[in-house]
Image (tube, rainbow, N blue to C red; front, side, top):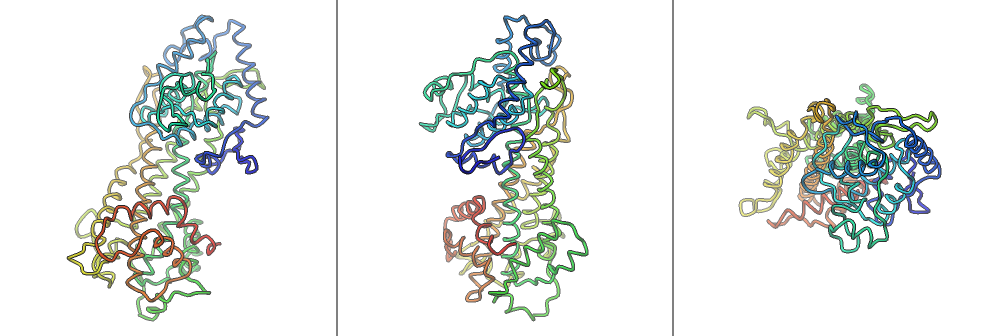
Length: 530
């Protein structure tokens, strides 16, 4: 839970939300353990300590790992066993996670340890908390997990930095440096791993889940932004709002469809300040619009429902014990199981990619065959094509001398096409690893990374659509649209001026996407939605 008074997120292993996790991007927000979590951690460690005094073999405590689980380890080598585990498993490759993403990953791992099922020492967890609060964050490559025994390689890199090896983010110089040096400069003693602690730090699905949480967080923001973009386009194309009549959607009462239709009515029907654009063509005799305008609630609706479903899966996973073996202090027992398997978040994030992609697919979709590329298929195309919009070609004056939105439209089409590949589910794949000991894997790390990539592409496509819609509205002046859409128009025009003649367009797209991602687009209409 988030404690606003203390500006702290309390990690108790039970109540962490996506919103709470994402709040850690703010440097002023820290983390702490709940008193109950501390008690559970201490109780769990007692069970491990008791095992160490006896002769019983327990996986991961006094045996090897994976195929070596039947190899007994002498007591004098148990600490080295844990260090060797971290070193050997730190085999990830590629670009590192950003410091903010590493911080979320670390906080999520602390939250799992807070459940008391991992057998780790309290002082070890407190060192992790200290590093998290000081932004001393290990270098974690993005690639290398198959999501089987959790995210072993990324979490091993996370642990590697905490034992003073490898690289770490220097919070003072804002660069990557040597972990041991950065820890000591910030008054943190490198962790000296003891029995079970290395394993406790790397078994789990926290890479999948932390990246997935960001994807869900941004997808929720996209949900409203996509409706805003759609409403602006419908207005600038002088479409009809008849398809959003409540009776239609009560006749097919999917929750997301009803929610989207209601939002479209609130954006397009302003009783206090009705749309002059709509009034100008209210009696034009047009009966119905193309599918990309008429079917917005039906298409957006299932995306809304899917995002909500995935949010539930991810938040449950965030507060789940995913270690192995797991410590049950109430039974004084350690049990091996399979909670580390990433199938739950992997499948959910594949669903998320497909659902979020549809916001871009309906914004700018091209048919696979020439005969499919008709007038019924694309919103951005309808804005830039004078035969469909009744506006200047590519939304610019002096066409020919100026190209206007010609290539911005192509960029949107390119991103949608890339998404079609990225939406292929990775969780339907599996590959046997660890000498067939881990013979079914989730591929959840890739599910998470590509879901986030799809979300980013959709943000860009919607930003391009909103820029095009603003430009179309400029050509319809002095007529005004509804109050909420005028608020969005004003928000965008505050950072991106009207496109009078050709200019460097990429900054316009980036600025609009930043408004969208930071919630300013949704913020502009929030007071009009209920």
